[in-house]
Image 1 (cartoon, rainbow, N blue to C red):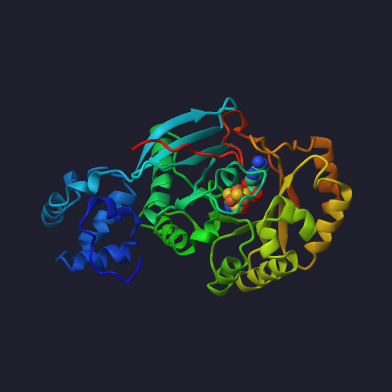
Image 2: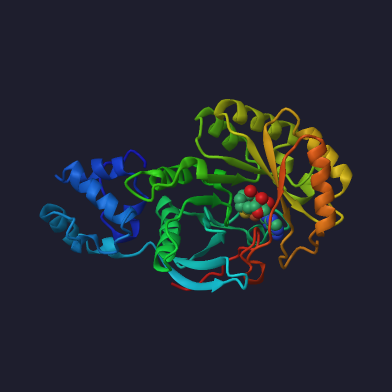
Length: 360
Ligand code: SAH
Ligand code: SF4
């Protein structure tokens, strides 16, 4: 939260679920409510996911009275525009409408009892990666912390409603570049890790970046507790920049040095994302160069066969070539995982998220 100590008077600006508990406490204190009331409200909003906290028996009379004068507290930050389930039965994609009519996509993936939410941090993205549907649509705006938290609440509620337990894992791999919306993302994650609320473990939250070097350096400086995934996709600056324009701004040498410092400062390894594109970045020579780049940096490579998008012609690498790529990495001492393809039929795979604007 910024330093403001009073709650905004208009519903549209009301950041209820976008406020960490301590900020809610100090704001409500200025209106004469004790920290206990603020904590009760925080718990009702974030743990119980109660859409009408003013009616809850857990809210004592002063809190109820206070909430009664704020009827907009029940107005949801997001509403569901549509939901599709993948034919594999393991992926659900939600198209969520924001108060200004923008929409973002949130994905729930269920792998053998382990559920992961994949949330968006921006509507659109300014980075323009050629193979990514979000990059192809361009930048619309940053999401607020309330809008990021609300996506997780939505997934949590969907899991509970289908009797599948609680959410444990979160990846910031939906629409947008998280490190271009740094402060807001960190506020949202602080709220989501609060034990009185959703109570996610910081080590189960992965932030994925296209390679925004100042953001990675800041994560290292702040000893950020969240695992970091960095999208490389190319083993030379030329090759990488052809796919990711940001590669021109932050060359590989600078990016990998920032990654190395992050591993030293935080004690975490780095996850490297590598989208496998047939005949483009999937040869044994590419794997040898990638292995050489990662020497001395504790890392794990996630190989993602390209998912189809409208404006990019490339095709996914086949499974035998992908396994050969993995073998070369293994010989170089670099562990890797070949990602399973999920949700492709409903365009919920990595890089396929592209929301349409829906009139409010
Ligand atoms: N902006 C961040 C996080 C969102 S993208 C980033 O770029 O890292 C999440 C991951 O999906 C990134 O590794 C990205 O490179 C990858 N991706 C994008 N488009 C893809 C596609 N069409 N097929 C496979 N992976 C893709
Ligand atoms: Fe943005 Fe990531 Fe897509 Fe690149 S891959 S356009 S950074 S969302």
